Image 1 (cartoon, one colour):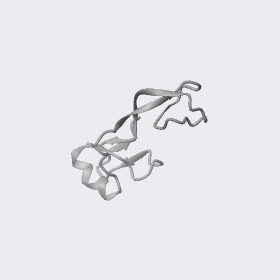
Image 2 (image 1 turned 180 degrees about the horizontal axis):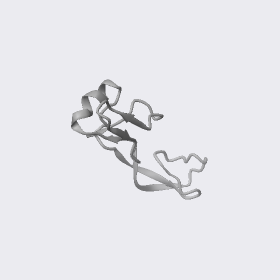
Image 3 (image 1 turned 180 degrees about the vertical axis):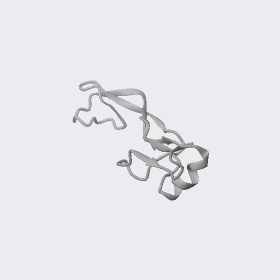
Image 4 (image 1 turned 90 degrees about the vertical axis):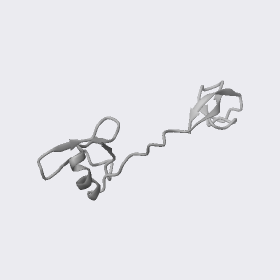
Length: 87
């Protein structure tokens, strides 16, 4: 089961039975079901299963930034309706 550590500074955790869980590239640990209860007591939580929302956005013609607003963060208003952007 994937779990999120209580703090991003936690790189690994050892459980009493001698297994060491290390943070993966996605920021989670992949724990054995036998250790989930112990890890939750230590502050680990389950990641959200909701996914990401997407919405139509704007593309700046001057700096190529994809954003949510018609006025770009660079200050330009030279934007066109673009593809979806992650919210």
